[in-house]
Amino acid sequence: MIEIGVLASGGGSNFESLAKACRDGRVPGARMRVLVTNKPAVGALTRAVRLGVEALVIEPKDFDDRNAYYERVAAELRARDVKVVCLAGFLLKVEPGLLRAFPGRVLNIHPALLPKFGGKGMFGPHVHEAVLAAGETESGCTVHVVDDHFDHGPTLAQAKVPVFAGDTPETLAARVLIEEHRLYPETLAQFVAQETL
Ligand code: GRF
Image 1: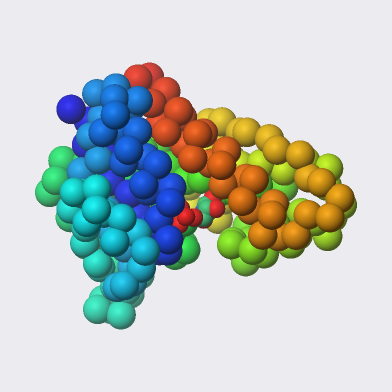
Image 2 (image 1 turned 120 degrees about the horizontal axis):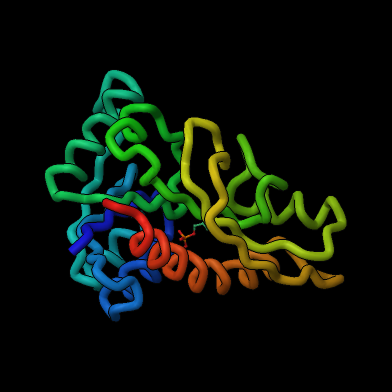
């Protein structure tokens, strides 16, 4: 079995879609091994309990610097034999401490069609506000390999949705999120099947 780890900061709906896909055999050969959050009392933790997935809260405030933080996160993941790390609404910038431990094996999902509407500050509702402000007629989501720049690194897959007149950031986010829940597990399945892990 290829062990999967997820890093999340919030509600965790993408974590749940990945965990269920692993459980239901839609990511053949993979198992959801552990969730790591950077904050206590986030929705993702409740979902982990319900799904029977081990969850760890590892908070940056307990470490001298961000790299030491990521070295601990990486050590916890490696101790569980995790081979692929999926960021799912994880709002801290990833540092070399994690990337060195999992070179080319940290994936992220972003709720826009990168390279548009990515980068610093482009998270949560800000992304969808920017898409609407730019008058785009389509948006979507992107799964990519993470490197040391925000929302950068090779794209693995994208899914598109239309933007409708009268959309709000909330209605657009909801339409994109449906695609996220389909695209991330499908892309993870392809990644796991192709990579020599
Ligand atoms: C998603 O829109 C994802 O694309 C972005 O953060 C959001 C996380 O949502 N990176 P959830 O916590 O998975 O519900």
